[in-house]
Length: 230
Image (cartoon, rainbow, N blue to C red):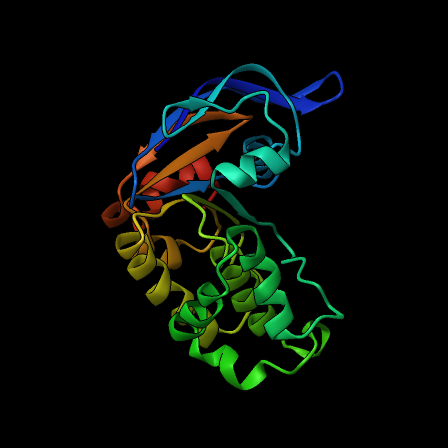
């Protein structure tokens, strides 16, 4: 579903992502690990079109989307939940969800997301700014999924949120990936979360993919120490 070949990008003359190649299948959840400053968020921003690729190709379902705008990529099925969530703070929960579904022209997607994330039902009339950090993260995820993306890009979804919300995201992400054939690429530092949801994890160092780790090996601190400083 998502094919990346020889991808490089950065900020002005500063290259951050260097010759990254990876494939993610439909229904697969792949995590990207690495210390801070290794290029993980830059990779996601390049995939979504916020940053331009300076080399390489990005293909979605076989179509080359490397030169498409953010809007065009979103229409083709790239969904992005950035670090910090970025919900609409002055809109209600229901209005946020409707904004996510508007591109599909099918507001029944809102009801489906409420079925998947029942926590949001009692919050529907509240403005986004009135929610807790964990509730905002659930809303950001549900809003993105209401647009029915084929590929979901998640940046640090567990950062700063309570364990009960993390457990809900763990549970629903795996179910949604299978039921919707959703391809997920998630940048995350929480090894327990990754072990629970990911089919495999990739390690980034200095803008390159340097290793692949299977979930059962994520608790081996000796194996991870070289890459993550554990």
